[in-house]
Length: 430
Figure 1: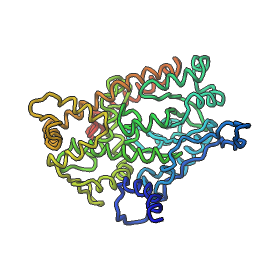
Figure 2: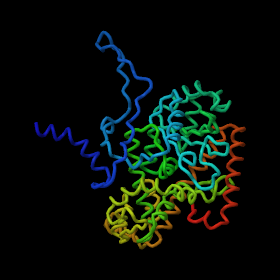
Figure 3: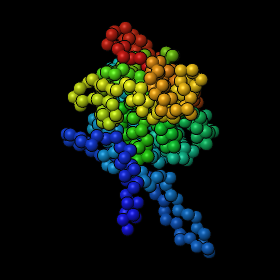
Figure 4: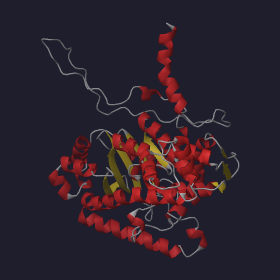
């Protein structure tokens, strides 16, 4: 009986062990994350099955039952507060979609304030566009429903070729379809559609950093999902480990936030073209430092060898090869492969098969490791960002593409005009 009881408790213990929350947390506790959203289309019970009545099996949601019951406090750092009016607007927009959305978040200057905008209110004339990302289970089915409900969101070519075509284009790495410059509830929005599998894969492995990089920065979760919440916590911790490997023994919280915010812009083709504000990273961090601290502080202090007092802006870390090796070995698999491939064959690095401990310590102790990490991150981001830029022409259509490009060029021009002042470009390295 005792053995069966322990067996039932094991999944909960495993999930709890993955949490990096501080054991002693002072102050008032924020509200728990929103529960996973129930689908809008519940499945009716099918008739009982027998040899004479082989009715189809009832549909079962493809969701891990273990992850349906994460501890209420797990990932509470991901639930960032916004103004009530903003929250109501975001929720009302997402609620208008009939197609089932498993996970949804809003991001960008329309949700959290950034420097460089006359107004941060998306409902004002000069306000920014609202950006959303939806993770769904079956993209072909989703686009079929959405195309029927909102045909104007898709260009004529996509409507003619149908939802199967849209789903196939979406599958092309990095695995996102965008509908842009859409008017809803009196504001202009852009929303991307991906699959939950693709989202979680990028959060864990950094295959493209297209989705995971966006989620390194503050986002507002509108529809939550336990599986995504768990993998997002891994993604945030991976961003911390990567940043720590490129920073000295002592640094400021602003340096940490700028380094993390810059990962997804390293190698982004838009930063090479007149299509993006060069000071974007600095603009984000200057206005969103409290949100960055909420995201990362509890995760930082849970890492061994890192010291960050709650009321201090200075962070200290152990930079010995052994401590850095512990971070290096736990980097996302795609980044780690890029790094190990770079060092393969170098005479100063021993074979991994000979002595694995010495191998990782040698890599972690290499003085050029920070610059190698920067170069490999650039390689990971560049290809997918170029492909997604080209996909945008297909998903937006020629008219919207020209309008969207004109707005981006205008933002770039304003950013380049402001970059001459020290306050505009401080720490804005992408």
